[in-house]
Image 1 (cartoon, rainbow, N blue to C red):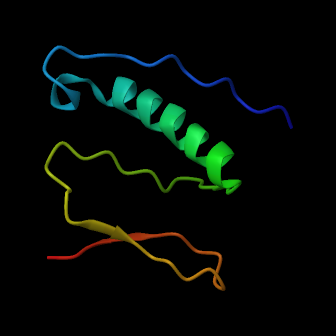
Image 2: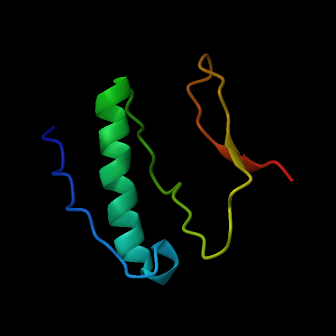
Length: 76
């Protein structure tokens, strides 16, 4: 299976909050690809992407390596 190319980085004048969902997702995929290459970890997710238009600074991810699952929760 051939990997998808990394989308070009996009810029918004006022930051990410002004970007539409598609642009934000493209940027997320580009940065996630860079993280995967850096840490040699790949994620296979089908139907598990949620795009928020609100602050999610209290997000935390599971860190149970033995389960193979990666999910998020909000700490507050």
